[in-house]
Image 1 (cartoon, rainbow, N blue to C red):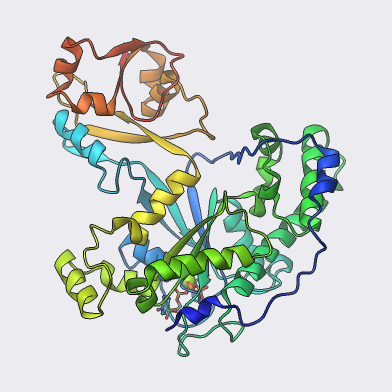
Image 2 (image 1 turned 90 degrees about the vertical axis):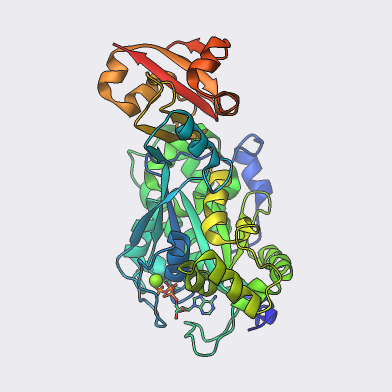
Length: 427
Ligand SMILES: Nc1ncnc2c1ncn2[C@@H]1O[C@H](COP(=O)(O)OP(=O)(O)OP(=O)(O)O)[C@@H](O)[C@H]1O
Ligand SMILES: [Mg+2]
């Protein structure tokens, strides 16, 4: 029940040597930070952390449903839980999508989803198979981004696997396991003579970083370099959002201070890049407890505990079910394009948002989008009509925008941009 959880009880000793950036520079020309990613078709976000820190509780809070079992004993989760989470457009109410759906008289407004994965807890030695080691690691390898849940609340009734609350040490344990697991995997691959060319060059760089206690993402690999090793699903190459899980008082009454202290914790980690690694303060228990309440009941409850914010809607960016998808969108540089409006006669059954990722579908064309809609639409592609969503929303309907000359005609090769509304003409 106190912010003192943020003060580490002990400082951890690190098994590796000092950072050897200089050494790495000898092997590789200096690159600007690319923070490159290669995303899977279905974007997956994995919740990881020590056992019993609140991963399943946070999963339920974000899903706003009680899907995962969250109980006070380590290794409560064994099989991963997965749930779709809609990716917000301008805000988490999907305002743009809804306005476009109204304009198109659609019966459905379908947001695009990412998938949140609640993973089994990880313990020291997981990289060597301790706890549920390998099961855990295989699930995380398939994820595109990691949300690292760090216990920062003090509650003597809730078991802590190392019997002390120390967010910095806990986070370092987990990060080290990811590094060790990658190192073993990279060395196995390097021993294979089939590993050559670009792949070998990149893996040698990665091996060097890992041996020096640095995650692979610290190398800021270019997109080509990431592509060369993407099939390995390197854990420490994945972008990371730290979610410091505090108690309800620190969240509701001392949120700003908790946020500041979480930032200070990040600075004390063995490795953290404050430019790329992101940080959130959450209260998984509070958020999952009040998630099921009506807006009024929530306000009443928050008022009863003297919260510094009372209106959950007004403070939407604070709550994980709002904040987490927004953060994921930001970190993975996701955009959205829409289909639906413009289908004659001004009525489309479904207005749908589609994820546009500057990494996975860098340069997604109108033709690619046609393929996502249906093979026949792609096959019969004639042209695409395109308008920016904010421009279209200013009109009463699609025809009015068209009469005003606002709709552009584009060909197969047109590269979509965030916010495009696309109507594909096909035969
Ligand atoms: N912010 C919090 N304050 C107080 N208690 C919390 C908080 N977050 C979670 N808990 C409690 O911690 C316990 C463990 O939570 P949960 O099952 O979500 O952990 P987990 O990380 O998923 O564990 P496992 O790795 O074993 O699956 C639960 O009793 C939950 O209510
Ligand atoms: Mg769990």
